Image (tube, rainbow, N blue to C red):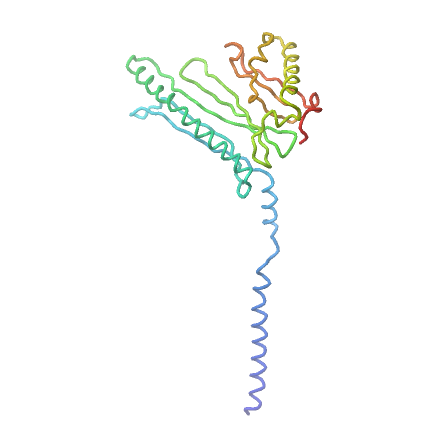
Amino acid sequence: MKKYLFLPLTAIFLMLAACSGNSAAAPSAAATPSPTPSAVQTEELADTPEWGDQTFAQTFSAEDGTAAMTASYTLPKIKNAQNVPAWQTINAWYEDKGKALLENVQESGSQALDDLNIARTMKYEFEPYADEETWKRLDTPSDSIVSILRTHYMSMGGASPTTFYFAETFDLESGKKLTLDDIFTVPAEKYLKRIHAAINKQNNASKTPVEAGGLGDEFNAEYFYLTEDSLVIFYQEGTFGGGMGTLEFAIPYKDMEDILTAW
């Protein structure tokens, strides 16, 4: 009987050992799985910035909670900037800008509180101050370049609030903030001559032209942005008198393609 029992037990042991061997091999094969479709999709999306907001805000209130001034600055932020140093650099630039805006508004906030107290003492209506900023992303000729246009609204209790515009252009591959020197392939003297000629031509054709020479005198190399088809040069509201708003001059790329950087 022992002889006949031994053979089946040996066979069962060998079968279990074989199964155990197969089970041990399975985790080894699963240790390096093929990427799932969702993983591949996530990696592809990282090639395109996903834009969102970062907000910096403060309310200056009296002891009873009455708001004398609100400050709110909504600036761009690339939400999927992880592991992309260039995008992190852009985010950091706007974070620093937001902190600086809050720091700079402190004096205005204190002034607003003083004005609120004076209004209460003199028994006249007080209009709360406001300092706000928003932004929008502009389409450019290249996926590797982005232009951001910021709108800054400021009301200091007067009847006529003021709106200013600011713009930045960034290289998404390096994180560098681009200047006009980066946009053109020739020295500043040459490209500025072309820019001034273009904006003067448009100004002369305007129904309300700026006085001759004024555009050149007030030109600010920081005041530009890019669109799909043009370089836009702008002048702030009030630069040429209180009744004149923001001036913009769109210069088509095709008019300067011989001196533009290839994107």
